[in-house]
Length: 209
Image 1 (tube, rainbow, N blue to C red):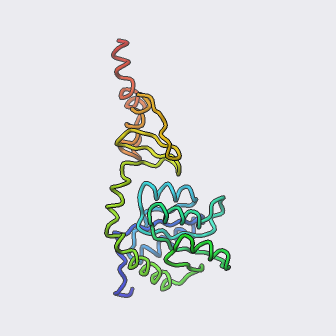
Image 2 (image 1 turned 90 degrees about the vertical axis):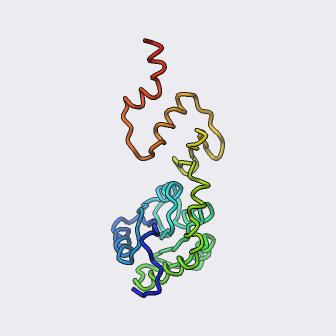
Image 3 (image 1 turned 180 degrees about the vertical axis):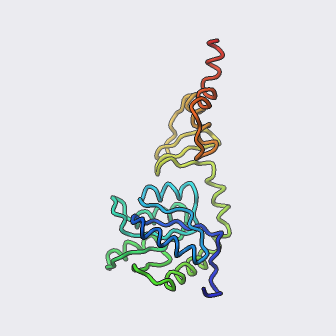
């Protein structure tokens, strides 16, 4: 690897690729470069949800995802909402696709199969151009870290205990607020039913007794 590359294991890369074999091949390639692949998203919604909750440093996005949403739409969302730098991969090319892809302001547009050196140069360029944002990513995170995204248009504010759908506040009952609190306190952790029951209804149980 060229010594002037700034590739660093601290940078997290999101791979958006619907072909699992190709995605794993890309992951292995990036790991050899010294990068950390934080996630492989095989669908547009998975990619958006992951980015909303984890803020990767870089996204390598396949344009054709065999879904109602294209990789271009995913990239547009990641760039406009989180300023995540984008590198596009595609197996075919024409002027129309290129024009649409440019709206996401990608740092590179690579034709598959791309050579290792081409990929290295693209990543190196993206990191150099976006270095200021990489250094200050925590500032952006701190503005958003109160929110846990449940779907693309549904988010929960852990500080204010408010649920938003399409940026509209949904009124929650007292018990619903308790349920969201215990489930989001340690997101990703499995909570058993007894713990949930005792946390939400313990006061009512005491009253009944």
